[in-house]
Length: 252
Image: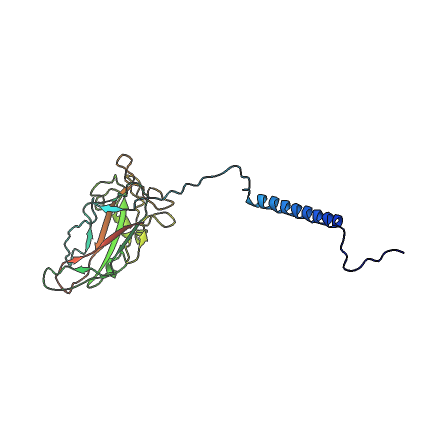
């Protein structure tokens, strides 16, 4: 009779060894697969070419001077019969940044500064106009226009380029200085504050499209312009203290 295998009997050792070898083989194969995956994950992706980025920070800052300094003062006298006051010589405005191109913004204050020199206080309020009839008691209007750096010193009043045509002509509105910043050289014809009829050279910014002035160059004439100004004073004044009108030119 065939012998019955009892529950407490175990498999022969040869069977267990075979099973163990199979498990070890499977484990080794899995470990190898994981190792290959780990190697692939840790290997950098091939690149060609490689690049080096060099970011250059611009040093320095924009800067502008008038007549060689941060501030310049000219003196004129108002009388009831002499209300229209025009610069007797051009003011040299220069980009002295040392290498940066810049825009110039022009503006004035909404009121004059009372210099308190005569004991009779007063201030004048700004009127944006080119017409004397618009400027009444204790009021003033200010105009400014750039001319070529090659223009004569008396270009603001002389016949060179006929500046009076700009002060009162068809384009005179572009010479009006307001209490808000206006950029030199803007507008469809780039003639904001630029006297288009100046025959001595360009009155426009060096880079017309960007309305920017290059750094000053004495050889080429770049980086500076002559500035003319005109003040229309009040019809009458309430006090006799001297008044200061500030024309601010800001480099951007």
